[in-house]
Image 1 (cartoon, rainbow, N blue to C red):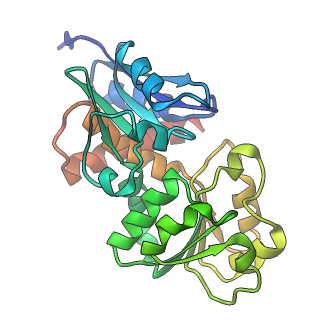
Image 2: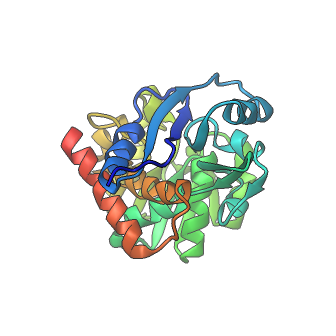
Length: 276
């Protein structure tokens, strides 16, 4: 039976955004699920403020938006209400427009946890202190996983002290502690570089069980390419799938149930497998 419901327009916003697999993944799932929606992408100016960002969404026909770098914290200040774990994180990656009100969610946190929980980490080293790092620190802390957070500069680390030990990248040099997972939550891979000097990173990788880069691209990110010489390495495609499945459910006002969530995630993973 033909779906006669009005077309729902969805999008991901970021800068850069050309690399994003979200439109491919979402449109594949929307077609498979028989939902009358279309998903696209928009590259916005990096210096856009929260007011202009809200105006952009409200003056468009967008019913839902996913948010990626560098707008996750900017978007948080543009919303009429915040739901769930996003209140703790103070960053959003999913916005639903309802009655001309903007409602924010964070699906990054749950998406990341679903991607790594089978590895049963006991101690995680988190590199970075931006919006994505906030999501990861919050969900790992909720699940009683020991956490060390490191960043190039120390200004943003004060917030993270509630979750565990905080260090500068320089302080990691000579560290003998073993981490089950090292997570790259910096934007270094987008720029085609490593998050820190090799001489500091390599000894950490040698003692880890998994290196996880939140970023992804057609080939290995610089972080994953280096990590694969010393340990198992994964990029952010699994997290993309899980956070995307949750976002799709919010966009279409679905009840969040595990069976439906896993079904949608399976379809989205299939989209990436078919295309890559």
